[in-house]
Image 1: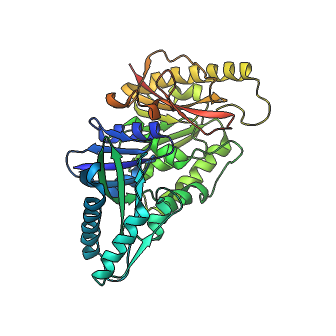
Image 2 (image 1 turned 90 degrees about the horizontal axis):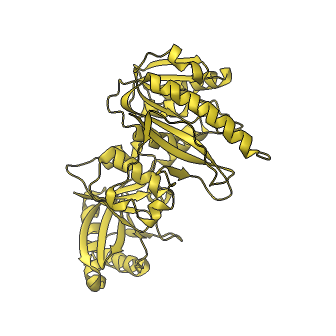
Image 3 (image 1 turned 45 degrees about the horizontal axis):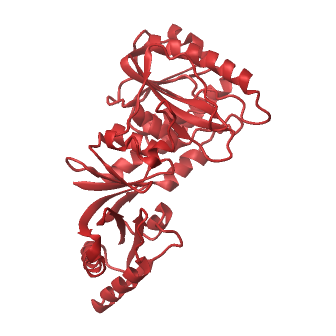
Amino acid sequence: MKYFFVLGTNPALSLAELQAVLNLKNPDLIGADFLIADIAGEIVPTNLITKLGGTIKIGLIKKEIKATNKTEELLNIVSKLALEKKQACPTGKFNFGFSDYGNYYFNKKDLGIKLKKYFKDKKINSRFVVSQEKTLSSVVVTQNKLLTRGIEIVLAEKNKQIFIGETLAVQPFKDLSRRDFGRPARDDQSGMLPPKLAQIMINLAQVNNPHDLIVDPFCGSGTILSEAILMEHKNIFGSDISIKAIDDTKKNISWIKELYDKQDIKMKFLVKNVLDLSKVLKTESVQAIITEPYLGPQRGQLNLVIIIKELEHLYSGALKEFKEILKSGKRVVMVWPLFYGNKAINPNISGFKIKNFFPSNLIENEFIKKHCSSRQTIIYGRAGQKVFREIVVLEKE
């Protein structure tokens, strides 16, 4: 079946995650954020999207037509799709809306007016949901019940071919916000990893057995380990040199377990220097190490020569420990700082190789390359930040 995925603000990161999870075969990217892929077998979008940090919407491509015949044929197809969905919906007002992706212009207002008239002629009470943006956001789709009591029809064009799809799931923004801002222990001073980024990093590690050991040796407030639990992983270990960090992790994980009723989790948390990790974890006992370490100072004047030297020393030592405890062929997914968006660090990665997940047909895509470094890592940040995140996936040789 042919599905579409609306990617997040960093399409390279979103694509890498989807590739790690679904092993896509020659997917097609329209514009910066609309990915189409043939997937063998059926997926459950409402379940899948809760496990993906970098995907905004998932839907099914229902029809493809030539762009040259678009006006009348497009209206007929859209009307049929909407009517089929209406017949499957509960009684009451039927809401519908459109989003279009890529550079092609669709007259959504005209389509919407004609579709509303079509429903009126059939004595169906409907409402046309519009937005000032080119696309309807997850918030608009959810608040207007387009998935449960209506439809969002998605349009995209490439090479004079129009793709017509129906959105089946959107990112659970309320849940993500609650996990980000509602947790009992926050440390805004040292920085907080967004839950969405934590999800992506966990997926990049490709840990398929829920009982395999996942380690975060710079666990901070426990975001990565919390998200791992929500993604059904049942064997976690967290350590940090800070007593407060371990206390915060314990509080936040207790909160997550209670809120989402997660039981039977094997957990261990220690106040421990990362350079002593091999003293508490057995050789080649770990399936994945997923972590955001100390990234250096975030505020004030930065003496980059000194900071980079110190961080390279810390990370090189940490990676030596990781190599000792990690199983062969398994991964470290790690954040490295990229100062002012272009000044990278270069720790010693002896015994590891950098892994990337891009499908071969999209490696040179302009929207993907824009977010990648010369060493095929992914750069995550926004203009004006002093410290960007470089997402590095290392595979033990």
